[in-house]
Amino acid sequence: MKWFYIWSEKYSEFHKYLQEAITEAGFEACPIYISQERFSKELYQQFPDSPWAGCNIKVLEIIKILKDGTEGESFMFTDVDIYIRDKCNAAHIMALYDSFPELDMVFSPEGGSLQIGSMFLRRGKRVLAFWERVLERCIENPQMMDQTIIKEEIVGYPAEAWKIFPGEHVLNCHNIAQIFERQFLIFNLMTNNSENQENDIEHKREEFNFFIEYLICQKIIGPENRQHFIPLRNGDYLKVSLPEQAQACAHSE
Image (tube, rainbow, N blue to C red; front, side, top):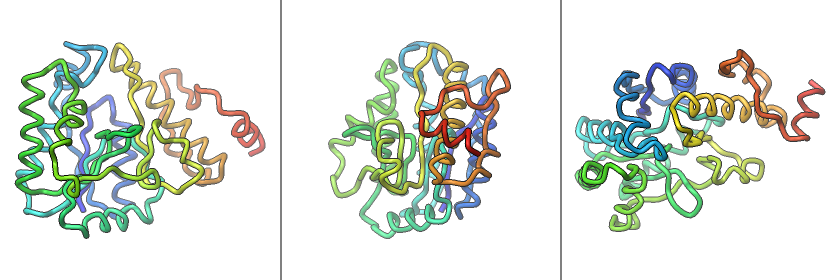
């Protein structure tokens, strides 16, 4: 199964990790390079409180992929800033989703709703029509984020044809409480909607490193995973204080 994601120069460290992780997990890595100049022109411009408002890069790329491929073929489309914990089972789990031909789309969870940081999508006329409608509305309503429009449009989509990933498959800050209750495949970092892209990226570096360190301290993954740490601006790796239990673990190693 192909795994697509978008990256630009400022996300090169995340791209390097994810490309290797996707391949190790048994998927075909399909990174989509978008110039930083284009990202900088479209993000944080018209509506700084919602970085993606007025930016249709993700929707446009998804439509391209849906048009260029075999009918019924499924693929993954995620953000670049994610961490894959279970590389052994990720491909097997996604193959299970693929085994239900009536299932067109699966989205990340966000509270009781959906989020588009990690998606399973299937090529088909119905799916293409959905995303073309989303693009149409994004152009008509540049003050709205693509994700907000998708939440509205999915209401009219056949209920049996779309689902939301359970916590044991995709985690983010909205369902992270499940992290030690269940196994999980993917952790999706979340933007903190800072006033500029630089602060958002630094926040994600901090969250990425902190998350790996916490998993190591809880003995969910091994210490060799520290090789994936991404340097912060000041050259450190862990800026955010670890919880008390994790601190004790870190000091004991």
